Figure: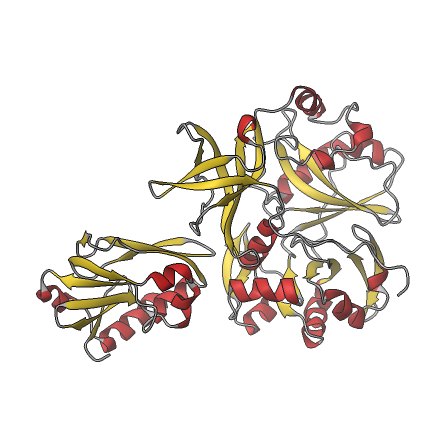
Length: 126
Length: 367
């Protein structure tokens, strides 16, 4: 996942051509606890960088999921809606949230790389 | 304000608890396993809960103590047997609930277990009523619950003969030469026990339970367990603006006391006779969406008819569950309602409580 970028809202994005795959980080799932509900944006909808693009709920509370970049939702991962516990099990792999056709690739430059994010996550949780 | 710690605090820390402030105490919300696993461990095996933040009030018997307590509690204390416990309330004149509690008749005193957030106010009410300003909660005692199907065997290994207790009954036992009091009761919908014991042996007692196969469980799972069991959480499902009749807890008012005088009795009598306009019910959303506290409830014509007071995901029923108050005309089981969550109307159905059923053990004669 060397081309994976991370946001301050604890989302990750991996780019493959024009399409970015987005999910939430392992660190985010550890902070949230057991996830029991997930809501995803509608396929075909347009989302704006840093805007709300879904919701996850743990047994304790609801949290918004933001999109780290703008674009059109081209695919959603229905399997995490059907079984949200998958998000805790494999957050940075099979439990991706949605795929976006990016509007402006330069938005990726505002995000952190893995090393920067790990440092950020460590500092923000201490 | 200083955050208080229970006698088990260091043990929680040792077991990697995540702490949260609750009613002025630093309490474990969960341990490293997480809420869902802890919930399932309690349902399938056995879980230990530190509930030492709750108030333990002991009132020695005197001539008129039972009469005086009956003036503030709707429970028939005169026919309460020694070692028997009852669920009861402290009420306001208007029928609202100051606190819900468990009262047990011990040999020479009453024991009352009070909610942590309410206990100081409760104490003042009781002090004033009994005209005894020296009355105080016992802060030298911890309170530990062990809940779940294997708890009986595990606790029996630590305290002999405890499995003979019947549901909602207690008795004195000993642990390492200390007197402890155990009742068969709980807040999870499972068979279980609550143990009142000196702070100084609390850690060693819980460590023994762990060594016999039980597991520490946090307040997070305690909440999902009690909600599945349809039990009220004070400050959420019941409060000063809800009466026991509205809360569907009429069963806790002793039948032979309905015509007596106790604080709140006029309102209770009126509500039983004339009915109530709102009622606490169970609500099951048709999707996995969680309807948290304060979620508005609507009827099919989009009229607001109530509010959710507790809502979560129930791991044992694998569904979103909630309870709340709904206008009496919509309180029938299977009534279709709509819950407003993040601007969308989620279809749901009024349902019977509890969401999760398991029969309580009635106690065994031949142990």
